[in-house]
Amino acid sequence: MTPHTSPTTGNDIISDPDIEILTGYKIPSKQCKTLREAGIFFITRRDGRPRTTWAHFNNPLSHRQRMQDTNPTPTPTPTPEPDFGALD
Image 1 (cartoon, rainbow, N blue to C red):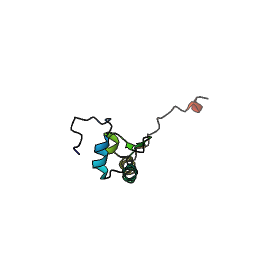
Image 2: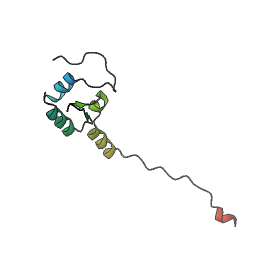
Image 3: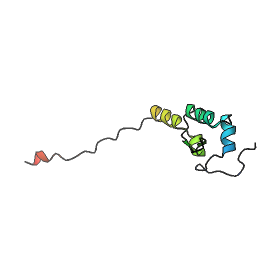
């Protein structure tokens, strides 16, 4: 099978032949298992085949979680507020 040759954007859905090439399996249940183990988000179609986008494949959920764990967002510094009690 030949891989997808047209230009893709991150939101393009990966074709069935490309899923087969990427996972190394023709059987849909094995494809789903492989994607799940890699931490790649997908949905399962009614025929049992996985469906995902290139954005999910190139930036899997497991990778995003690791990035958040190693680069936590800084806590914002509180903005100073006036002490209205001092006016009494």
